[in-house]
Image 1 (cartoon, rainbow, N blue to C red):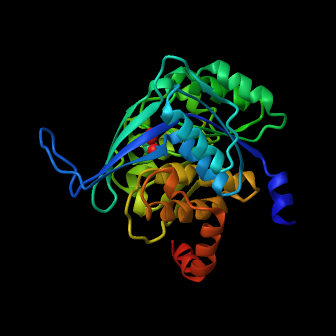
Image 2 (image 1 turned 90 degrees about the vertical axis):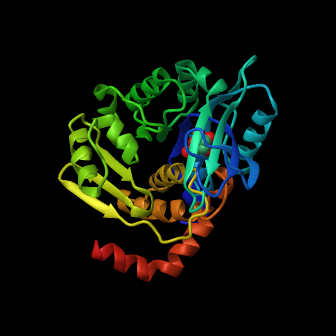
Length: 325
Ligand code: RIB
């Protein structure tokens, strides 16, 4: 099968989530409470967890539609342009009168660590009606991707309705909040990081061992598979009678913003084109690893060619490490 035929056969990916303009300052060290520090640089980058995941999946070969809301300002136009440039369908992004587009104030320090403050703006207007309209427009169900930067009622409606209609539901529960166990039980793949897993379970998650214990507790809700993302420490796949560690690739981190989004988007893209889950996790590990070597959110997301090139180059070393796990 050639690339074009493969893309045509792939499942559609619907991303329901936020679009934010990221206002980013770089500093040597994150400021402490009450402290003023000088920034080195300021820049704006298209971001938002939903839009980042949409761009990640599209750049990695998936057919992606974005569902969300923007305000009527210049940021909105820039964000839509960034989605379109990556090949994301934007007809389901609604422009809301009288609201500002979402923004995120991000501080990035050495080694790529960051803090993020989000002002949701128009993202708060994304409602079940938007989800219903988008689901109705897609003939064949594929993969739905969700996060926590649109209202909980919208996320919950999407999980229920998409699941009932035969979509595979991937839920990235970020930023952290508690979620009803009945809702989690309807999710096919959950992709929390350590903080989010701790918020969902009320259990401490400071080590791989604690992540496994919390993940196993979460399986009791009925969620089918959990992928715990742990940055440079890699990821853990936790399912019934199965725990598997997937290593991260070794890179010089510059900016970790959107690494988790890249990971989730890459898992969706891999599954959409028919990769088995474990293959998709390797693919996602490489994509997310490459994303932290560049600045910004969407600007840092790698193409499918870049990921495949890396995999070809490193395949021997990578396989050896994977077997040793
Ligand atoms: O996950 C990274 C994203 O979180 C940023 O792009 C920012 O917009 C916030 O939503």
